[in-house]
Amino acid sequence: MRKVKFFAMTATLLSLMFFLSTGTIFAQSAKSEPIKIGLIVAFSGPQAELGALIKGAVEMRLQESDFTVAGKKIQLIVEDGAEDTSISLEKAKKLVEMDKVKIIIGPTTSSIALALAPYLFQNKVIDISMLHHPPQIAKMGVIVFPGTLESTGVITGWYAWEKGYKKMTTIAADYVAGKQYVGGAREGFKSKGGTLLKAQWAPIGTLDFGPYLSAIDKEADVLNVWTTSGDLLRLVKQIKEFAIKIPFLLSPASTLRPDNLKELGKDILGVGGGAEYTSMIDNPVNKKFVANYKAKFGKRPDKNSAAGYAAASIALAGLTATQGEITYDKLRKAIIGLKIEVPHGPLSFTADGIAITNRYLCEARMIDGGEYDWVPIKTYSNVHP
Image (cartoon, rainbow, N blue to C red; front, side, top):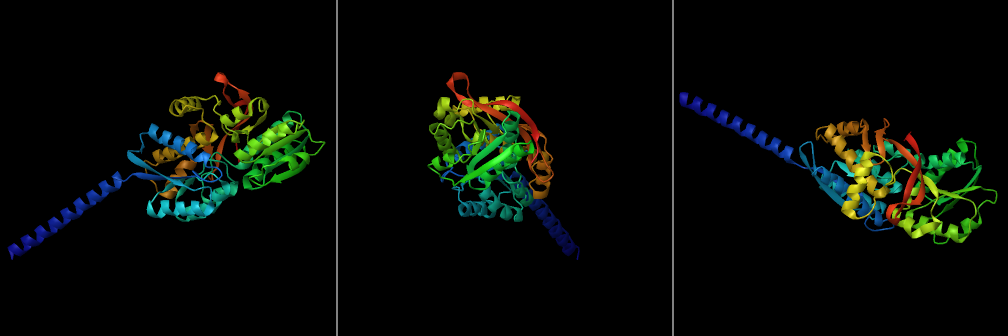
């Protein structure tokens, strides 16, 4: 009888030891699991040039932290969204369902981000944007950095009024970003007392802006324009070719990268516009970022590079605050509560996750070494959505 009890107690003890050791192994395994961050950008399609810029900056920021946060390794998984909604959604599903990521950075285009947001929200995945989006996307859980489309456009409108212009006419891309960037400029100008004239909307991919330039209101004393980077380059060249006499402003100006400015040469010098970022911003974080970026890539960063770097910084700061916890509600709350410095300047968030950052009225100028860039001439601090 004693032998039976002895064997029973031994079996129980062994079972307990097995479960305790198994639990320890599982706990150690969970602790050693990397935090997976997905990145959806375009390496093909109309804005393919942005993909490499953003990827390089995201990797650079993670390398600065040795791909580690809160004692856990970080694994970055990059996907090509090809600037296409269905492809981007397919890549998002792969990241979530196969790779088990809990944080996604991107995509860059507002219409694609709006399409992905409900799926990511439903699956409790933190989505950190890198370029401006409409404010309603925050209601779908997206962390909207560097802010809304209108918040950059509006300062261009304010500045136009401050410069003494009274009547504004506009040409912009006929899609969400164009209508909200330039719509913000129009509303900012109107709010100060300016008169709004004709608003013209050009499809993305417009090769000849002649008809739009010919239709500019004769009484206008300022022209505000914006479209996607390749189109904007053509539009600015054609403004000069058509010898448009009235001054023009860009909303945002930073869509034209330093290499674009160099291509335009003297024709772009002195042209102004609003921007959320330029490599010429004078703060310690940006100076360090610019120096390290130039050392690594041999050129000055643009707004796309800075956005990727800042988005990675937001993810790292949020994970540091949660000590590596990736539960959706806890991580989202930590991110929204952040007050940090990024290359753009001081960063905080509204209660629904929209960035509050500085905006800069800039002019295109030649800087040291014959390079071109946007130089801030006025800072609008902590611009809210």
